[in-house]
Length: 494
Image 1: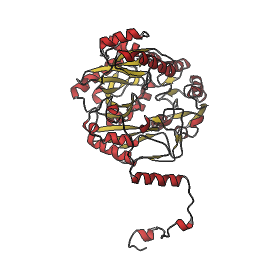
Image 2: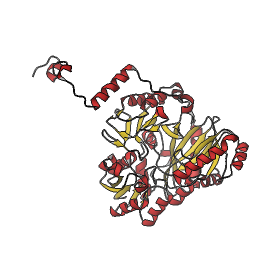
Image 3: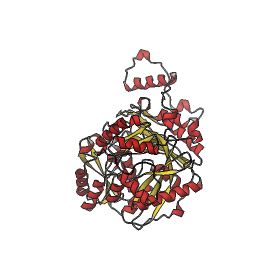
Image 4: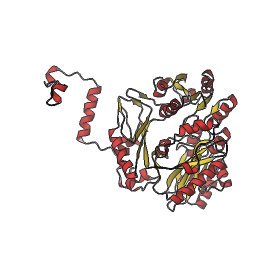
């Protein structure tokens, strides 16, 4: 096993990796930018290396600086987390060249699966069902419109090198095609340096179901059950759960087998996620393979008891999978809510700034993977995720109740968060019934507004007053007896 690894990421995912490394006796090296000098992952690691200014290209996206930090600290391996360089095949290839273990799949698999067209071709060759659409990039709008008419509107324009909801546009008619293609291509070029696009059939009522997979270098590949990820905003997930209530045991087994086949078709090694679209008739189609640890991996850990980061490290160290498919069993139900620094009443616009006060919910079956603390400045430069709040209970109904309780106890002051919005979603009848689809928010919460009553406004006024350190005159104070154990515990004697 490794003695020391470098974590090429920040925030809650970096801390998540650090925690497992501590359990395994592995030393950790954090990297940080100017904005993260006092970040929690820096304070929690054994060593920390400054890698540049807050601009991502000068720090967390700078391959040369991260490789140098790994060499200078004698790190044997690099864990990329998710985001930044996690799915950058050039980074994985550079690690291979420098003799540093990349904790993830090989660079070829990342390259093949990172390109949507190449991955679709691999899946077709491996007899994995893919969504109807193009299997090549297309720059001619007229050709796109003709093919879209053949498949049937609506269609989804997608960037071939896309991810994170970028470079995606829904097209409902031929008249919308030209503008959608142009804007999707521009966004993809800015985000990924590649403006190539294609399209897939868009299903208006579909579910986003993904399967966690693990594969070692000895040819063993298994899946670790599914996750329901249909609650999304701007094509990005905000609530995930497992198991998916819509899946029968037979459908789960069938989709799991296809997920394993997809991983094998791509020559996949380490932890990854095979994503499917499930239509109203329970037909499923391959979407993509995410070549990294997913943000929502904790829900899988909660119902199976399997530490996925530990599995990543074991596989990367060259060890054989200790798990077989028949060993995988889920118990109970788990839900995750992503807590972002963003304003749900303003189209989920980022809300960076100083966290004046943070109080995490606690209790049996509650887990909060958090990358912030009271007094921490959420930077404007990076993804605004603060934490992932996860609950586990015996049933889905109990998990919903536990999550509602946890959200009500979660206090974050100084910035905007979607906590109230998440509460409304969880307490809604469609969510309670399990009627969740990828258009759930647009259908049920497109005009959502925060509901502030007089009590809320009074509480906010009080907090603002306290934060402003208003000096109170003696005449304004009401005299009262100081509270001590001698006058609060009732009749007692020494």
